[in-house]
Image (cartoon, rainbow, N blue to C red; front, side):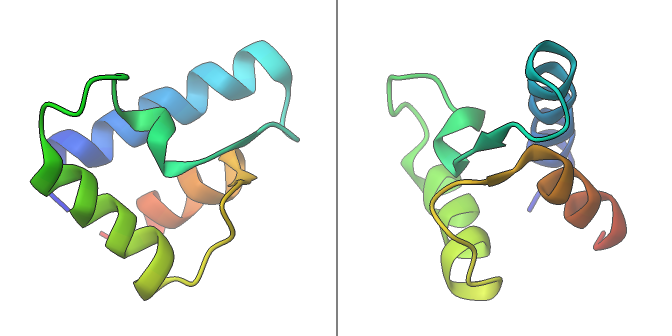
Length: 72
């Protein structure tokens, strides 16, 4: 994934954790607006989430943030 989406994922995770605590869960859709204006990037993140890492639909934000930071 490119640097911009990685930064966006970390930003969203930080926001969710700050608002709802470390047990907050999210899906890969949390990193996109309701409008699908970049389907290629959405599919890239979905592939990373579903195929590469075999994650559930909802995962803890803290886990996703850690994965993004550790796997540059």
